[in-house]
Image 1 (tube, each protein chain N blue to C red):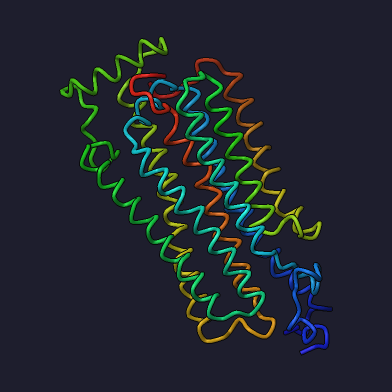
Image 2: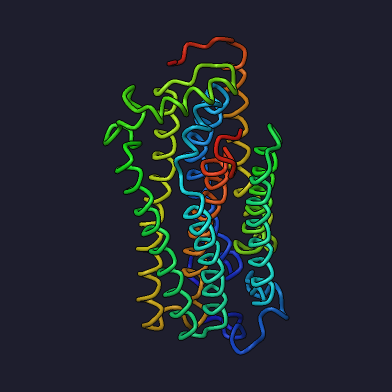
Length: 117
Length: 233
């Protein structure tokens, strides 16, 4: 074991931050994130209770995106990750955008596309 | 411990995480295809998606969302326990995560059984929307009026094909997650994650949280399309 790894023990890691590229997130922060997720879950249900037409889906997806961001940033530690990890995390989203844009421009430009009725 | 092909622990940890993130990127692409299919067909058949969504159990869906979000918290606490080398707390938190994950699958099984019995499981048991069922015809007619586009049984079937594909693939990932968390529990109980070797737990956690995120999107998109008002939009 290297001296660096040895110094890894017996400390309050959270106070040290980036020791060994290793950030230990304090428990109260996890609890706070969970509480926020619960509030957002209730908010989704409340929003679904009202008939807002097209806005229902916009609100539902927006809340889901916020929930996902909370999970990615705090539970998955991206908030404290290196730039390279963030690039990997963002890559999926980037390619999904390409997929969506290119297929949509095909489908939406052909009105009355031949789909089963 | 530091393996010989890395310069230091920082590099080693980053490299280990990157592998899981790369895998999760491919996973996001796989689910992304399904999410795209969902968007396209919902755009084409808005009425059918409303009719189909009414047949899902919002209470059980909400309960499952809570169960899964809670399991993400216990998983995060397990990662914390591993980092501070608290073996007992690590095993307890992983055990809770496992139980919550198993509960999720149990609740899902209850829902799928109800779907099967109702006759809304395409290719397996599909008869609810057959012409003989007056109630189903009433539902189709109602949404035909609302969307000024004929809602047909085949369109509703498409909703359920997408519903079962997405929740099925998600459940399959849950099964893999349970195996992974179970293995972490077993190894953790043997003290394998002590002495600075806590990262396997963190990486298993990344996978677990990812499955949670998929469900965070599936829940509103599949269950809440028609809201709570029966017969409403």
